[in-house]
Length: 113
Image (cartoon, rainbow, N blue to C red; front, side, top):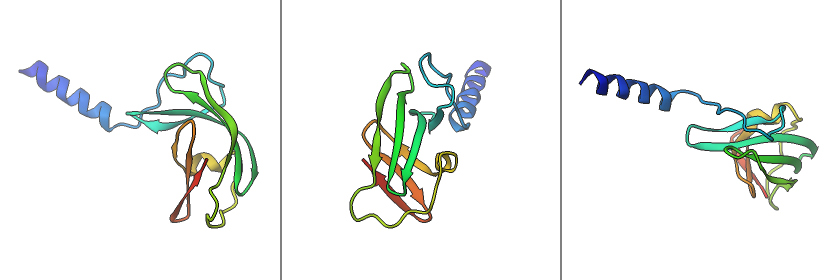
């Protein structure tokens, strides 16, 4: 019974903690982890081109392989974005996949594809 309680406590602590996985071989050393305990991606911001276009390299969280290396553009009809740069944008990511990026801009979420 004690073993089960210890296992349960360790599991709960692991699931509730902020967790950055071990960086796989092949992931750029300057890439940042965007995700949670259920998965995510390693992201390298290559360039913020303007307020509606960002060039990103997206690495698989497990294999380290590049899943996207492209310019993501804000979908048509989005609101004007707050100015951001290569450093500040990391704190604005809502979610990232190989095909879409969502950035929290003030109280709105902007979808890039």
